[in-house]
Image 1 (cartoon, rainbow, N blue to C red):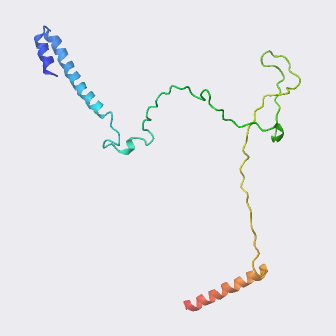
Image 2: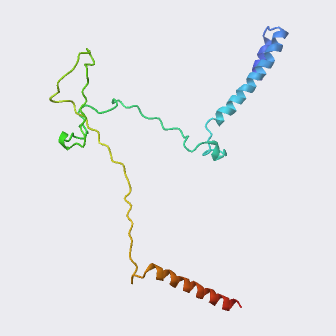
Length: 169
């Protein structure tokens, strides 16, 4: 509580009961002002400019810099060259689906006949990517029959066991 407010209160013509109520309120106001000052000083703190741990701020939570407001409207500007894929001839399309409504959507009258120049819209779909698996089978040199190869292998294994037995003894 400031000395000025206390002196002013004593000089004023307030009753002692009113002064008893006002003194604690002035003290609380002073405490709250100091608390607000502390909080405002901490307002700009983040892990980059304080001792706060880095985990207290998400890495992607940095505020975006404010965008400057453009005077132009969104989208293509007047005089902008159009960028679009040109339509290919209907004969070169893989599939042509004529869309013919049964009735007019405005008046509900039945429609019949065909339109000589319909509105065309083409959708380019990418085919499903499927891996191409190729197995190469190579013949062994000398064309050894499989049965004789297996018996040769067994002979080598038996001989190696005998050699191991001789050295182990």
